[in-house]
Image (cartoon, rainbow, N blue to C red; front, side, top):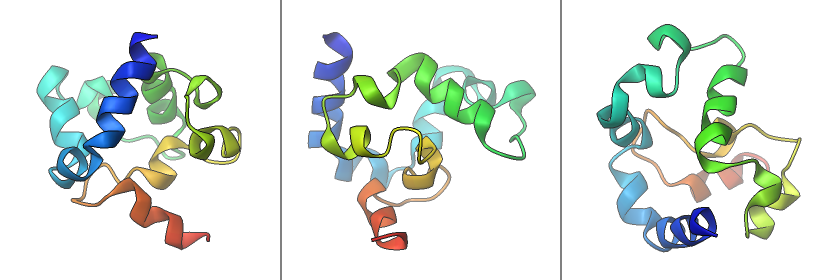
Length: 96
């Protein structure tokens, strides 16, 4: 319940939150290791995707059709540009 509420709030303010960069806000928690194994990016992004799911939950548990429709088809970082100042929704144009 609290994850869904937090996600709803985050999505409501996503323009402001994501404009500063997702990586910056996560690195403030515990450095690059909060998302990357040993602080270094993986080759395929699988470790990072699991790191997202370990905190935020799997896509199928989100109260969002956008996330549910992409379960098993995309990794989190396919849409959420974490090391650039960009909105997650801007990534939709890459496929749609």
